[in-house]
Image (cartoon, rainbow, N blue to C red; front, side):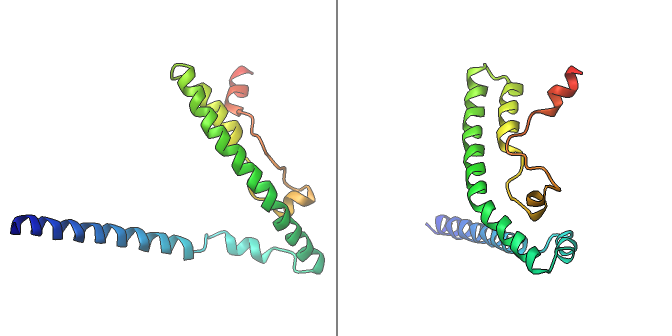
Length: 132
């Protein structure tokens, strides 16, 4: 009985260590600032019109991002169906996944100004390069 208790205590300690490491890593990834983020925020327009376009990009991102995530989830499922129904053809499934899951998820002021294109669905460039 004491051997079982020792194993049980050892298992709990192991789980405690694993959960602690995962929580600390998650917390650090949330509070760390990406290296390029400071540079982009310093270059942003501080004028009232700049604030307006930032607010507009935020407001546009909410419905656009929700629809884009929905399309990506449906694409993930249909890519899985494509893989299964094509007899395990990974290239076919990846073309569905690439088209639906890649692209723009967040609308930035650059998108609204026309400086950057918005890619809702991404065409597979590897196939078009191979054909030429």
